[in-house]
View: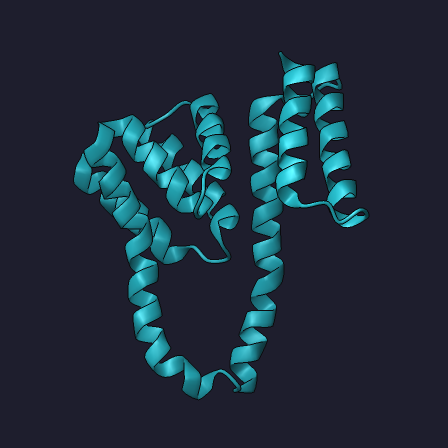
Length: 178
């Protein structure tokens, strides 16, 4: 089982790009395929992973691994998801400084931006639909949308510190959902 965790997260780390949030749908697919967690458990794990320090993909891998096999599973999953990036960075760093100004390299990176954006939006939709459900409009959905809108306005318009927005959102979550 440890090798399965390590290899699965190594594969995820190797084929995924665009940051941790873009990797969430891939992680969710693998977790569901292996029946390691229920969808609700996964949503909760991603929520906790997002609140913790560090990259959300690595935190998610750690929590999934811990759920499956305890501390050894957490170590295997974390090493699996981190190792491809480490290896690729070391190898590419030796060559990238020579080609980073090439027009084709820049074009590839510009072409990947919309895909990364789409993966992040998809992850948000999947996580939201797994939790409260998109099907019906209820007070939970309205409260979630109000907190989301307030957070966006606070950060964008009033340039509030993200930590303040997180704290206020957490307090509103207690008020609305307890």
